[in-house]
Structures are given as C-alpha cells and as structure tokens.
Image (cartoon, rainbow, N blue to C red; front, side):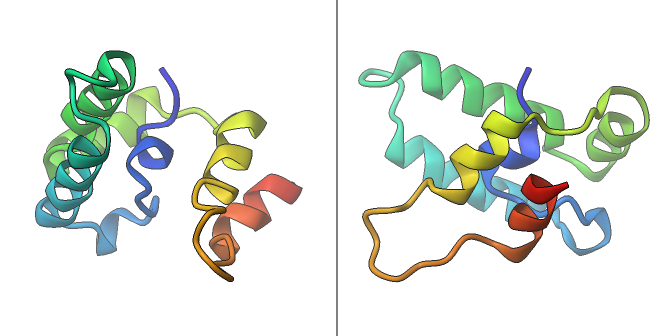
Length: 99
C-alpha cells in the first residue's frame, strides 16, 4: 500500500493531525474520485482513510507499518495540482523528495 498520508494529502505530524482533518481530506477526495467513476482510486483512498481514521490507528500505523514513502509517491504529491495557477509543492514534500 502506498503511504496513506500522501494519498490523503495529510502531514505526517500526528500531534497536529485530528480525526476531523482526516475525515475532511477523505471526503474531499471522495468527491473528487467517486466510486462509480474511479473505482480503483476510490478504493485506494478508502484504504488510506481506514488506516488513519483515528488517533489510535495512526499511532499503530506509525509504529508498526510505516515505511519511507517511495519517490513516485512524493513526485505525485509534489505535482498533483499543476492545473492550479502558481501553487507550489509543500516544503516538506520537496525536502523528502531531495533526500
């Protein structure tokens, strides 16, 4: 499974991440990738949401399942919204990409 934080577009900082923020990101992606038009992407988003849904699940993921994101995931996030004018990639994403 790809990194659920990258799939949902969320920061990896668990202290600043609330259950509501995870749900908001999930619902935004469900609207963008509805299951009837994008079934594979929807399943990927759903699995990511189920992994990070609660603080306990996020902690469990960080302790036992997390791996470094692969380069393709980072590139995807960095250039996800290129259609939007003058929006730069997140600084943490670029730092991770350059490691």
